[in-house]
Length: 110
Image (spheres, rainbow, N blue to C red):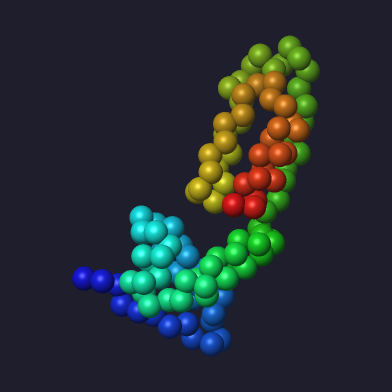
């Protein structure tokens, strides 16, 4: 049974499109097929997808980790980061902070 078309309520457009984009991400459909099945204009869907992905995330924060001496780096197994249940990053001992910074910068733009 195909999905029923949904129209946003004027007062909740942002919330409506956030929900639709999440539905699309888990649907295993192409963007075009998702829009067709839900009677969305592709241009409107793309507009909201870009708008919401470029919205600054207010719940993102960085925690400074204390640096360890070289002999302490042999202890432990590194760090694992899970970002919005979309990306998992495993950082081994002795990682390059600049590489991590560039990776996070790139992921923020996806």
